[in-house]
Length: 620
Image 1 (spheres, rainbow, N blue to C red):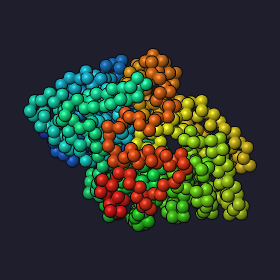
Image 2 (image 1 turned 90 degrees about the horizontal axis):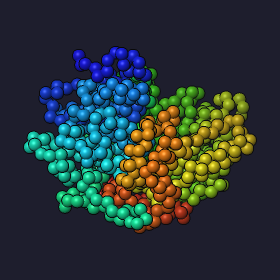
Image 3 (image 1 turned 30 degrees about the vertical axis):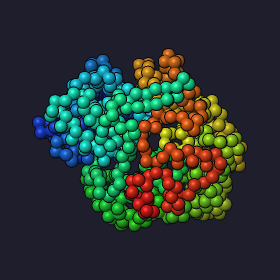
Image 4 (image 1 turned 90 degrees about the vertical axis):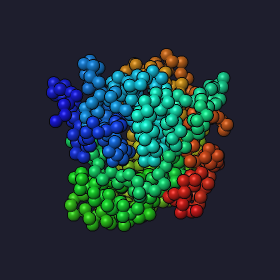
């Protein structure tokens, strides 16, 4: 039996010690003497969040299919253990072997959310790995970042040796093979990084030089070697059916955020919402084969014992075989008490019909995301939903027995007016009114509508990447205006309103579109004790503001400034598959309030056709 890195006296004093023990069901153990490459996969947040992440499960399974590789896991220690490890000088360790992370060949960090960036520094710090890539020696692990936030890796560029740009199933094996050859030949760290930069999708920040104009914008970004590409091509899986997918997902011993089997039915989205980064980055839309999904569902439920299966997608309603898949799952597992969850459904009769089959209507709530209250603003963001469709969908839901509805909106969208903001309250009132049009004896109790607003953040590789972002005060003014308008509505007692934290949103915006000069800000904030910034109880905005002042970082430069058409963005060295020309065309159409048809209705020539797969292949 393996020796634990933490003794009993420590485990008894900290919250949820099972976070750090390993030995979960389906965890992989291997003989270290027969392994050539050790890879430690990291999710820089607490265990319960990281264990719910599908990407980690896919890569964990993919790496461990190779006999020469052992992939293990590490998560951010919660603040109680963080303090103990620093006091007792205990190095951060991987769960499977309990070996120090510093002893691995690779440390791969998934970048899901900008507000986890200080946790990246925590991981490196507790591991005893130098924070800056330039200070690492031959014995230190190669630190590689990936995930959605790697579409603009520049704010973290100084802390990483490599970034993997795109979907992980395509080039990681090639990277491992190059590393094995390099290790066998006894090459230097610098030589390996140069070789790695020539693998499709691999970005090595230290091999590029960035210059700036006098106004602070980027003048150029050039590779230092002719062997290093000037553009890094985002990697995408062209065949989702015949690729890696875990048959035996990890099963935690404690309750995690998503305690269920996750079945990814497709990637990408045909809709083209202009604020949505995932909808642009994961083009083209690609579906998994129905028979493959049926087999995967059987195997994963058997291997885990979970009692719920979630069908994962950006827009589940658009999966062409959804009725057949749901029918199969109900007939095969419904009698065994397995629940089916369907996030990301649109408001239409088809979706409601599916939902009625899989949910206990009297217990569950429906989630709709109109995103904007007015039709004008929904056209600006290309949401593709009319008020008529929203009210018809809500009415059909109420008549079907639902009485709880969650509505998600954004505040601070480009061109937004006071009337657009108030329209959020007006739309909620119209939905509540629709409920009370049902005869009293046919209602399912009192109507409960929860309105939630997040604040808009312009993201890279979206048509809104040129847009200005609101200040903290502007965000809060908008939220208070919505709140007051809801209080004036006739059915206000049926409507509950909450909104996101403005301080956190502003920082998210800074790092979403930031450049590599932000490393000093990030380091200063970490040194001031900023950690777990995505958790309300751990977030300290005053420390961040002090870090801005002490590093001379101009907050407005990264947030409230509208970008010029010709500006070079920090992420322009990445070829995402969607062209900048297409994105700017959509930015112009947004300001003209023009709607763009979805990908199945009409191809817009976004550039993703080069992958020759999914919906693009259907049209060719």
